[in-house]
Length: 65
Image 1 (cartoon, helix red, strand yellow):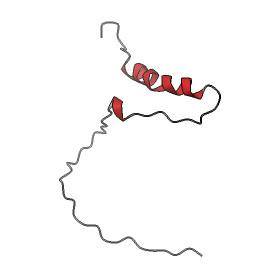
Image 2 (tube, helix red, strand yellow):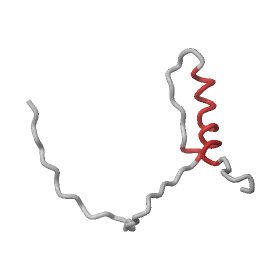
Image 3 (cartoon, helix red, strand yellow):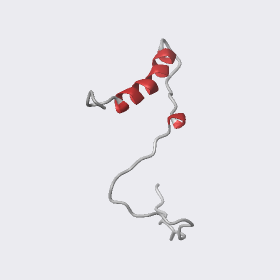
Image 4 (spheres, helix red, strand yellow):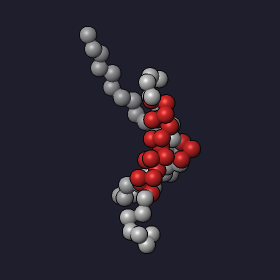
């Protein structure tokens, strides 16, 4: 049997969060981890995924970049 508990009223925020219609994200390289099951060759593969992702994202689209 499921019980439906209504949400309580929230408290006001302690900080002001500006409203921005443009999506943004902050990514820090040292905040990234790789997680995979420890079987077969996963350790070697996972250790290469983060550098590969960074390379793919930051690869110049124009030869002059």
